[in-house]
Image (cartoon, rainbow, N blue to C red; front, side, top):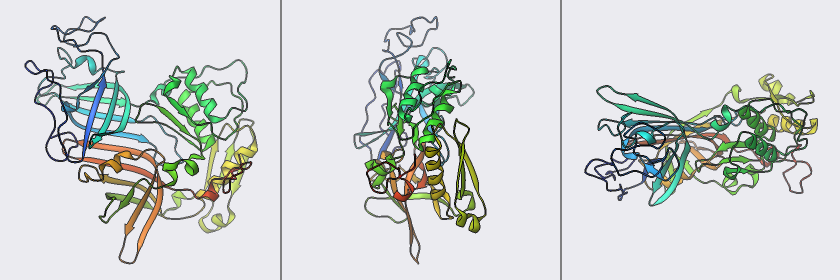
Length: 432
């Protein structure tokens, strides 16, 4: 059966075997098919296989890297991916993917295998879904670790990381003097990426609105980038297309996919409705934060709180350090956070759905990306509970006969919670 497929499989019988060098082609399927590919160099059809610059036989590659994408889906027993964040208060961290490959036929042995050279740390890997001939990127990154189980049921496990890993191990060398005062967040992020050698042609960076203080660097690149995004109250994340994306906070009010629901999740079947398997919601004080302190590089700390919420729910304090140039920007951020988190209310936190079991809705499910809006409804005899929510994180678990997708959600902020002074637009009057 095809990985994550619905019905019959689509793969050919061999994969660069002794008597089979016919390329694998997709056949007709119902619903979504999950495809895993690794970027490799041109394949050598001559034996012995080899890699230039290596004395190991059996690698099957001329040259160590680059080239076209090779489909390894036939070997994948199961995979899981995780990207994004749990809530809007968390920074987006390095995303992960884990793939388990069946090695009963020896095709992915550590030595003397035509695939051996492809399964090495640093190789780009991408996971995508295909629905009715249309591609839906799911996850993009590089192989981090390759672990071999060489017992009676041999397998190979690939542990992979997404593009944020390029920042994770990098340090920003301290500058001799403070620089870059009054940068906007997008410009400051571009500087960070340039310092660590990230290809800026693979970055899609909004300008943002927050005005940043000067910096001397001397910090970890990933932590700096995350703090820049938090200063803006925006979103920095690696896309499934292999790019690094930054949204300013205004994207929640101006981006078409963030202001109009892209999917309708329901516990009842219906045309264009996605049935979910699990919906997690909370009505808890752990989501109430009515007292916010923001500290900026000058040492100034600003505080905003809501006394009515404190009287109802007791004081619930949070703090954040930012790169704001002055206290007006920090005050605006603190005020927005108070408005959004001051009330005890029901919040939908995550939803999971079966991709393989809903072939007619697979394209809607796989098409959802970060900060897309979705409508979620739960029906009761007495009435319906529904919310508009935005996607904050996406995870997949795929086997050869199942495919589950889970979305981390947060309730959509109202225009009154997202405003900016100095704008000519209504309902966009945010401080900072």
